[in-house]
Length: 369
Image 1 (cartoon, rainbow, N blue to C red):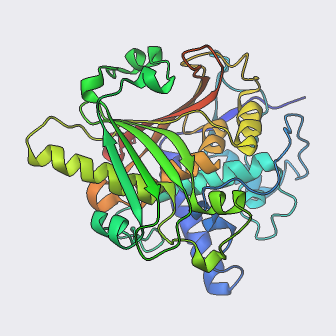
Image 2: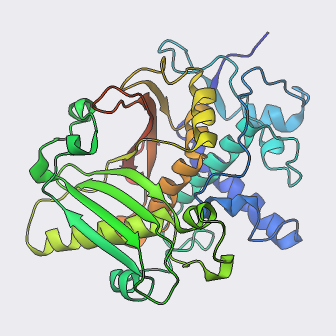
């Protein structure tokens, strides 16, 4: 008989993060794995080469009487399924299985949960924590002059001109008024000291209501692969991750608004829009137990971050990008983290369904103890 879904008590998540940090430090010292291990694979926001298959009927291989399982279960509280946003028995969490250096037996689902938990802990880590180095790309000028990103700013087009249905915005307290939105589009071109890749990232930013929508994400590495691997890995521009490029362009627009005394608000809403990556689509269907046609429009399926489902969403390439955005820019943003995830169908204006992930962002000081 399947166990009921469980969730991390809010006050236990920092304790678990501290345990993970200690365990990770110990394994680094013992040489069990290096800094290039899977625990830091979140630096790549591209899809992996193979797509995992849904594994809702997962079978657990560990002994339920194992001491570590009993210890970890003491950090959990059972969660009522009264909102129908969790799949019963979806992912019983086992700390020993998730952090065994030999993770070859982990299911795709368990890998997502582990990676999401790592990213949540990185966001929660204090500024100056050596395990979460801050960005090495602090300059907007270097983005353009050194690394060859040409950036276009456009505030004349309503979101609907990008085939975006905006009905859900009112539900989260965000205005769809064109005057509040700026579309920022960095394109990797001929300029700069690196070979062009035709990469493009498009974001829509509403500074007054604190929202960022990641609308299009075609990274230098993925575009290079699409073009037949014309460039070697060493030839691809190092400033290539969505989290860094999006941050530098967002922060440039933010600083200009602050300079001119325009109203701004800290980021509270981040949306990964129109998710095309097959790997992530498969994961979202597995997490929600719903298809794109049945997951529903906003709020769709809602998961507090202390649930395995929310951590799994954060562990997807799209979720990791959001986590790195906040984890590596604390000098400017402060310590902010995700407290809720919504997975839903955000149809285009013509009704075509598409997967979206919404991340609600809070200051770590505002979380309940």
